[in-house]
Image 1: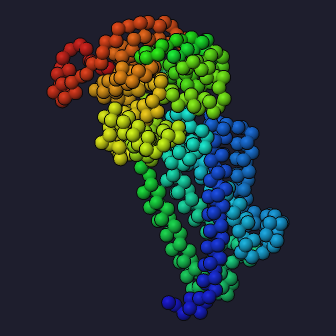
Image 2: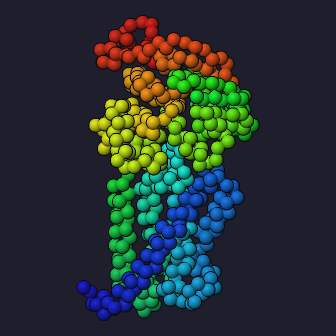
Image 3: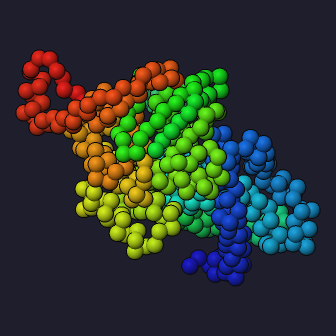
Length: 220
Length: 249
Ligand SMILES: Nc1ncnc2c1ncn2[C@@H]1O[C@H](COP(=O)(O)OP(=O)(O)OP(=O)(O)O)[C@@H](O)[C@H]1O
Ligand SMILES: [Mg+2]
């Protein structure tokens, strides 16, 4: 292993750990909140089962607003909110707040899009069989859209990694922050390159895993 | 069995169904025919309330469906099965699991479910394909799976919207034979919507002709029986070179 990496080994491991925490929480939020929100967004659309113009437009607008914020501004804009939730606006825990919010908005949109790909006839068949909304969601929607949902989560996760790189501004740490502080600000270009390589490998691995799973579970 | 009284349905400014009344008896094979856009599918979808009528009554099996709570309506729909032109199977479930879906919805025990799924698949002659996925099947096989799925819950009524319109004549004949035996052996009341005269004439005893959202006339006929067509390569050549009847079902 190159000497610089040995030299900064402890810091690098810590940075990787921070990135995993930030991205991990984002993924958790995407699944636990983004998935239901995206499903609800889909169901409230025109001609869908829970059609509700008002709910759909409001939720749709909210998701759009969050997603159109330049992320750095969103982080700063949310500082009071973060302080309210976590008690401080600084550090890795605080950094997860804006990340989970963008994660929910990001993934819910992709969930909505994957659900839109399901042929309308499948839902019609479900209704004709007397399925309840809950059954339709779990026995029809999520079954038919499952590979799209996995691919969406893959795309989202890669975005979360990218978002996490700027969390240095609020002391969130992570690989991106390390690359900037040591590599860029202390003119250790080699160190910065190594960090970029780590990120590239990470992204490749996630993309490969996501596509492999999505292909395996798609029987259509 | 099915009793529609002065039902009407509009989509925006368009009056798709204009005050239609129909009575279909228990055990009947009833046909609905008409030009494209005449309102056949809409009328069929009014029977299980896939479309809610603006006016009128929809009685099936003695219940007024428009008066039911949503829970009761879901229960009622479990005895009104439906099949579609494009099958509408779940692509990510095996044949077996597709047929099991309505049984799961009806909370039938796993053991009983297994019996009924296999029984239904045997009825349509597809038990050997139970572990395949729909993408691996031909159109005719997919429609049989859809029929097995419809049968599994032992419905009183089977609604068929263009069940053979995506199929070739031979496969059409096979599907019609299955529908006929469902009616004869299981006593299920069947309503068939089709724009294909041959299909309607072959199995229906009473037929409503629709035009512009109205029933133009309802006639009683003697079903001609299902014609099977020689689909060997030789048969094709013979029919190509012979004049006259193209034999298209
Ligand atoms: N959900 C809907 N929204 C708006 N218009 C509709 C809707 N469903 C049906 N229509 C219209 O109602 C009319 C009747 O449609 P329907 O599908 O019942 O016709 P059909 O007789 O089944 O025709 P086809 O043979 O082409 O299937 C058509 O003009 C159609 O455009
Ligand atoms: Mg139609």
